[in-house]
Length: 337
Image 1: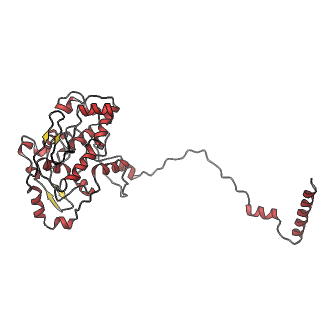
Image 2: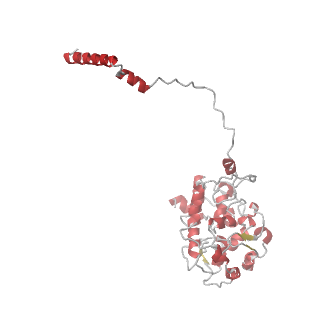
Image 3: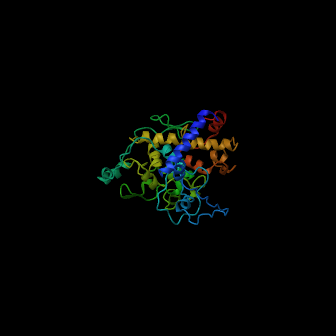
């Protein structure tokens, strides 16, 4: 031990003796007091953790879904929930994507006071319009329609084809109560051209009170109800109280209105060249290794089953006036776009 260390130890012993004489706590006792007594270790149990006995109404309710554009994998179950959770659920990722796919940043002025101030005039305006543009021409090769006023809007299904092949579970033109307007709209299907509905079972294909998946071309349920579209703010009541397809019927016949750009934009985001549902469907063909469009898609013959490639997405695209064609699938296989 060095001389310095020896003197240091002597000083420490002298100071401790002085503290004891003065009855003061030593540094060691202070440290022990601050540290406190050692804590007892808790016993651990190897018993298995019991599963919770309470069930979540929110989770239980989420297992049953209504027909929705969000459902891109399989048709909704046949059963329906008998109870609903009182706690509102947050929108899932698919719901958010649906909003992005079907809306734009343009606000719709649909305040009840402005719309209901003169319902008679509003009702009359829905059918009092006169054509402002010619009906579209159809490309004989691609079967796409071309509108001179909107060259980027190129659906390949006409309203008549959509109706006759089966759409919206046969309920699109049913009597509809609008919560925004506070009135029931009915019989507006009668404004459709006679050749569109001639020979069609109106009660089954257009005005059915119950959604019937077997009416749809692909035999599955998909799509939200018009009431849900209204609550979501996607209905521009000044022009088309039933929404997208009613707008398309009137646009096809030559009507032009202030809502055209918004509706064309929604179509592009759904089934345009980079549209969400169009790309989803084409990716499913590629994922399954299927290079040919089934004959059922092209000419109605029952050759091959479209069930192999999501009939729900097929029906969704059909509602948006677009159907996959062989040249489109060939291009997607080659370029991925």
